Image 1 (cartoon, rainbow, N blue to C red):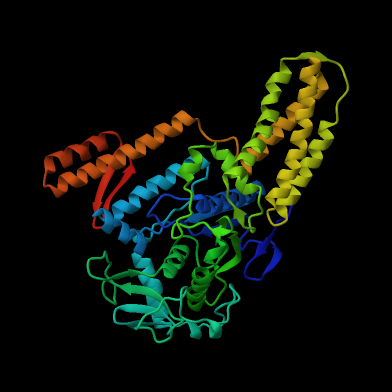
Image 2: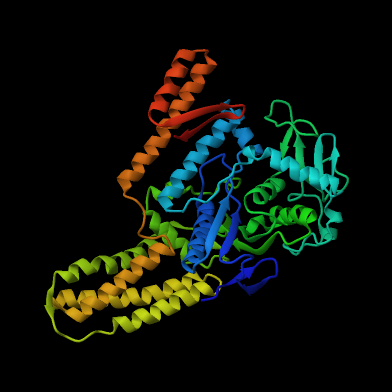
Length: 479
């Protein structure tokens, strides 16, 4: 079954044809790790997790890359507020992110690069742009020449001549043109920095993703994804840099999910109207949030409310009732009555479900087919329990429907697959304990209590946790 998907670059529905089938390369912009992730992040993560799962269901071999922005103004400001190294902030919220992803059953990306670990690659991209006269250095900053890239604005349909310096354009006295955007920012006093040919500083946001894509996926990829708000300037600026260097398409398909809103206003930390994933999961099963996201087409806005979470919870319960009803029906007296037609409905459901997903990943329509089947199953279950018996053929049909629901909803939508709550809690406690010990070791080292610091390091090592002290802070990994 062929897949059609909406391409933001062409503003139309297109048949999905990867560059090198059956391989598919996907990159999505990850989180900036200065706070806990919120429902807006969850929506993008769930959408692209399910799209990846569906591509794999269709037989593609997906290489999925999702980055971490672990050096940024917001991270630096947070580190100043807490009087700690910026990498301690990044590490804390990367650990928090992984906790959320585990509970939401988001499949880990194949590669999850950090900006701070790709500075040489970022510098290489910037130097190539300078050599090609697409960028210039000014007092330790480096800027991209927007007007030199003739097709600038092709993704967001914005005319460079109409763009003005303002909220979405970074103003600076060093720019030759207000439209130019920063590739490298010179270091400010007291802020973390990296060495470069233009002096100490740190990369601009728009260059980071280009460098990581080049390294891990190559110069042209199949799908570049992210939230609709990233179309301009971030993704537009990525295209300009990448295609200025390679002179070939950066991504074949640009796929953007709609925003999460609250009372019609975009959910964001800057507006203070965000709801963290942790808050939602303290009240609801993670699958309920996944289902809420899938009830809305990925390109449409999703207005979040607790009432909608309750609706999603009831819908989720209906599916669970249908699946769990199999054990109740198996306990009933068996008769030799005829079939009730569930197999015919199952076949129609199967066709409708996958047809909907193959037409721009229409998850609401696909779920509509699922709930038609679920309603019929629950009707059969209720009537059979009231009657006290069920035919062997009907039980067989019901069992096949349950098998389809479990296999399909688990494989494509990631539902009914999460680990037990006790195991999840144990892993959250473990991650928190590790971070606490690392913080205690940092305090001991700051106080020159090296004996305690070494005891903590050796103790963690005995538990299979290796620490590495770097100029960017302490990193840990399992060994």
